Length: 311
Image 1: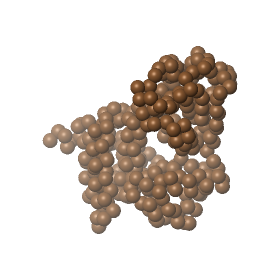
Image 2: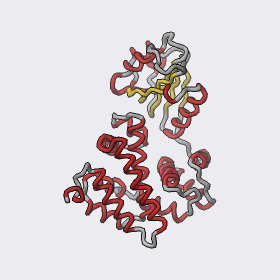
Image 3: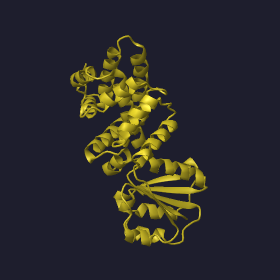
Image 4: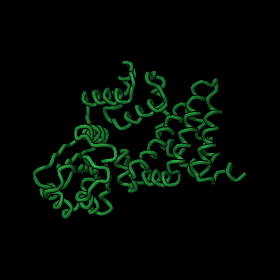
């Protein structure tokens, strides 16, 4: 068994390296198991190490946040365990030196720091290629300027461009996303209104935003909720770390929305957003299509507490 430790503030690079590791170890999809170390410090992780898989093959036990691993669990992981079981400890903070020593010698430690300068520009190229985007020189220059001090925001923009189907975005489209979907307070204010079933506020906020940018933001938000369900994330700190959020509050709200929607609600959200995405791109006036989407999502995301549900 090998223990891999991937830590640092570059969450995108950690996830990319994790995907590479799955291929490197030839781990099947059924062979990945997730563990939240904030729950028990690694007790369940240790138990799983000595448990046979129902599906056979190589297993990867993926646990985070790494710095929450207990000394007792680290000591067990440092002993001889099955050769077909590998452990990945990952997270934003480094594993304490004492815990690291308990893990023993068969440990691969890699640190991922958010790049700056030319390295940040190279990262933007990598993210764009991974998302299937072709960036023009003006767009690349604008994103590189932003990436020098806010690379996570660039990653969010690239994700939105991919989600809304703009493989070769213009500078105007990128500027709209920069200026609307991430305007201070606007994005969370909009989703707060939708989750509260406050249709009037949602419509008022949407009226002052670019429809394409809003649909892109809502797609990104829905993607986060879907990932929370897929990865079975429950702890707000783990969710905040996964999405690069600065505090627990938005992470707590994402967790609550994921529980309220479930996979069926997320699928329905994607249906609504997909229809709106097409409409706002072809309609002479895209705002009516956006208004319809906001009314529908307010009903769905609030759990049926919007005025639409009470009629």
